[in-house]
Image 1 (tube, one colour):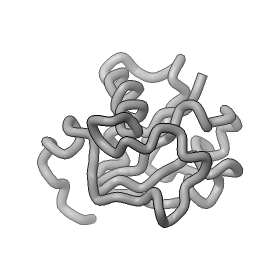
Image 2: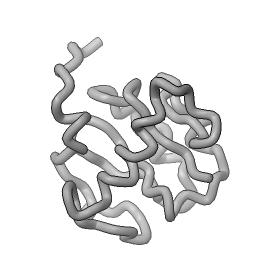
Image 3: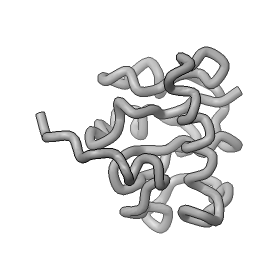
Image 4: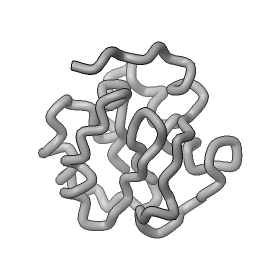
Length: 111
């Protein structure tokens, strides 16, 4: 079990979840944030502070958002960042890249 960041985060990146995460498993992509599933300790602190309701427990994610389970995991793989499991979000592990499915979506206007 891990938590997953979904499409509501795209072009928002509020950062409340980043500040709340005790293990720094939330990483910066270009248009959204991503949770490294092997580093997530399932504490749900990120879920409790997300103002746009973009975070779900993987076992409870709505069907239409299930692709984000793979999107979060694949972000850390060789086809996107190649980071694997870095062991904590630091400036070194920040990128302007996104998973191809996220990158292909139209940019949302700022609110």
